[in-house]
Length: 492
Ligand code: TXE
View: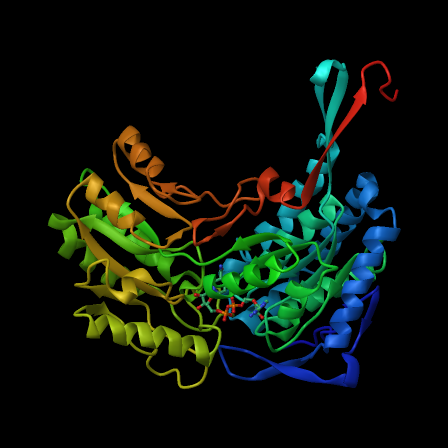
C-alpha cells in the first residue's frame, strides 16, 4: 500500500487528532492487516463539532449564498477527481470493495454525481409564487420559500462508504445546511479523506463540514440527542434506524432514514427463467452481497423452480471470489468477523428450517485470513423462514416458488422491508403492472438499472423514510417557509 494521508478529525476548519490523542485500528477485511489508525473522537470533540456547525449555520451567510455554495461544490468535485486513485485505494483497503465496482456505483458514479447536485443550484426555484388570494377578505400575495434545514448530522455505514458520505454531505451543502459527518467504525478513512479534501482544497468555510471518526456508537448517539442538531440523515440497519428515530424524537429532529432490505426478483411465467436466475445470482455476489437494494429473494414459477436453482448455482460457482485488488474480482470479503458470524448464523438457520444449499454454504476454501463467505444459493424454503425474511447482507440468495402473478406479488410484499425489487417478463405491460403492485421504493424491469444521481432512492415500510438522490434527495435538506404580504405591497 502506498502512503495515504492519515485520517484526522475535521472540527471547525481544523484537521486534528482526537482529544487525548486516542485512535483505533482500521482493518483490511481481505487480509485482516491493520492498515492505519483513525482518531477516536471524544464526547468533547463531538461537542465542539456540533457547536462549530451550529455557529456556521446561525452566524455565517453560508445558508444564503447558493452561488458561493455551487463554487465550493465545483472545487470539491475537482478535488475528488484529482484524488480519485487515493479514494479508490482507501475504498478497496478498508471496505474490501472489489476494484471493478469502484469504476461504478462505489466511487466513479457518486463522484460524477456531485455535478448533478451542483447543477440543481443553477436553476432551482427557491421561491414559488402562490398567487393572490383574499383570505378573510384581505387580498394577499403568497410565496413559498425553501430554506436550509439547519445543522445536519450525517451518520453513515461501511458498505458504500464514499458513495453514502457524498449522497448526504453534497445535497446538504447545496441546500445551505452545515454538517457533522460520522462515518462507520469499519470505514473511517473514506470519511476522513473527504474531510481532508474539504479543508485543504475548497473554500467551504470553517465549521460548515465537520468529520468525527469513532469505533463505537456513542458519538452517533450524542449527535442524535443534541438539541443543536436539526436533522439526522442516517443510513444503516433498521434496528439502529429505530434507535436513531427514538433518540431524535426527544428534540423532534427531522429524520431521513435509509435502512435495510430483503428485495424480491420476480420471474413471470412468460420469461426465460434461467436467464433471470443467472442475472439475479450474479448481482447477489456484487461486493459480497453487502448492498441494501440487492434482490436476495428470487421468486420463480413453481414449474421452473429446479431449473432456476440449478442456473443460480452454476452462475455462483463461476463468479470470481477473491482479492479485491484483482480487476476481475466480483465478490470480495465481507467487512468483519462479526458480519461473517451474522451471515453464518443465517446459513445455519436455513438448514434448521429445512432448506438446502444448491451451492456454497460455508467459508471460502483456501482463504484462512480475511473474512470470506462463499456465494450461496438456498433452496427448499418458503417465505416464512428466517433466511427468507431477514436481511443477511452476504452473498446469499434464497429461491422461492410462486403460483402465478398474484402469488408472486404476495410473496414479494410479505416482508417488513420495501426497498427495491425486480420483475422479469416478456410482456412489458404485464411486467409493469406487477412492478406497480410492489410496495417498494425502486423496481428494475428486465434488468434495467435505476441507480443514478438524478433518481430518487429510498424505502417503503421499514426500509426507511425519505429519499436520497434526485431532486427529492436535495429537498430532504430543506424547510419550507410560507410568506404573505397584502397585495400591492409586495417587495420589488
Ligand atoms: O449497522 P448500524 P452495522 C445492515 C446490514 C448489516 C446490519 C448491521 O443488515 O448486517 O445492518 O450493520 C452508527 N445511534 N446494514 O452494525 O449499527 C454506526 O456507528 C446513532 C444495512 O454496521 O446500523 C454506523 O456509523 N448511530 C445498511 C451506522 O450507525 C449509531 C448498511 C450504521 O451502523 C448507533 C449497513 C446509535 N445508537 C448495514 N448505533 C444499508 N441500509 O445499506 C450505531 N450507529
